[in-house]
Length: 190
Image (cartoon, rainbow, N blue to C red; front, side, top):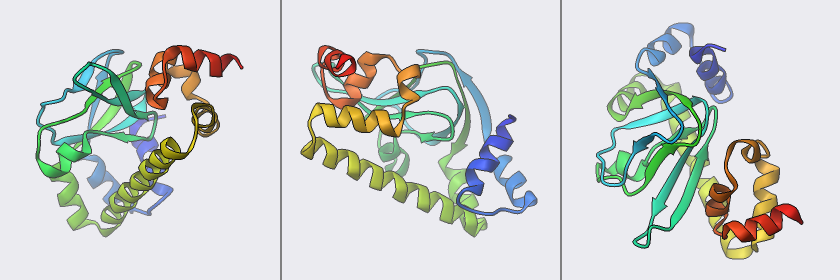
């Protein structure tokens, strides 16, 4: 499938654009390829773009002072990723974004997104809807951490995103769930 077809199908789940509107939107995106393990955003970077994943898998994560990794998001095909705090505020990145696999993305700069949202109401609606959906997902995840044990969080992740277990190393899934690799192994083998 061509990149524009993947994006068009993704947008069509939420909004309707004319062919001219879509072509104009797509002209503001730049395709890029990254290799497995490649860093896209590092804490301390200036961030002015977001990434639409066409193929592959990214992870957004935070390293604390002890260098312990906390994974905030896995981004697979048709997901968007960036350090949104830095993107929206202009502050420096506090999280990192890198490639779990070889990854193909479309890149959009924040300035273009804002311009497009002013010019095409449907795009403003789409990006607002996406931010709201992301907020709800973050809230659900936080509530799950507060209310559920590791087994429940593991089963929840497995049921929502079974493909992750074929793409993402178990040590990264453990970091996402907030458990040790050994605890994940016990959950995985039970």
